[in-house]
Length: 472
Image: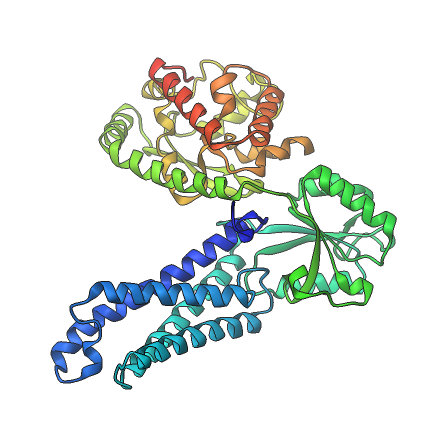
């Protein structure tokens, strides 16, 4: 039932870009309409400024029509399907704005509108191109900074460190959007070093430790190697592409996507519940915003109690390992003494949890108010701001401190495939189970069986546990 773009692995990116472009074009027209109001007063006899006077709905309709035209023409030109070199992006964008503006001008002239109105449509087209260009510049800037925060890039392993593989890596590095990052090469013939981080047999280990999303085959044609990589990548749930240049041919445009300015053929793509994940993010943002608004008096009261109970800041901000291991500042109400992190190393020998996870009963660092806040999980409420920022979800694996994350085994990294959450399956089923491995199994089960209905069940069970005071 879904259109083809929403069934692909880049569905969320496609939907986000199309929606952003459509919204920007619509806002441009509304801004233009707002500017026409004072211009009518200053120049009452200029007919072009009388456009859509007293007919705001006509202006909105024009905005929606041109928004649809630009996104449709841009989509047919490949703007949203595989981002290529920067110059090609600008040409496609300019073509979409030019054609949509020309169609509106022609329709206006056929309706008998004065030719002077053409200038208004041209001005609108120039505004559209400028704002859409600015959006892509901001996307590129954000992509260049994504290692320091924001949405994680797609991590890539390239099989083959020869001429073609190096060209693929260079193309990805020079791509304007910064959507991919090469984590290294796998090559059975080249010596280790200069980007070669392992052999093809190391694919499973290196893919997990580097949080790889896709594998690009750029080695000389070898059927057994291709089948080996494809089988292993499917087991690891990774996307696989192959560079058609290996076969000395250029495929039809419909069969490929672009990695930088190089075409690649997709051999295997993981089918992700893109629509469901998009709904999850929308519900997260709406739920967090509503909760922060409704609970603001409670948040203020808790902040006052913390301040009266012990010296130190109200909020505790710690670096946590987020999706793909990317660190982010996780906010909580402070429930411990000011120097709790310094005391943690001294208490390591009393740790009651197996593995790298640290937890002890009757932790001496916890304050009086802190014990109450933990009992009813009130200390977690500031993480609603993390959800609103996009660092966390309402439901997902709990984010571990960076020192615990540093002790992960390779198999533990699978829990970081999904955005961390305020609550999760482990919290509502085995919160008091001291086994680190049990927690990992529950996190992986949640990722494997995820659905919006499962999230709803976990949230309901979490609310019941909070009311009963089941925290610790």
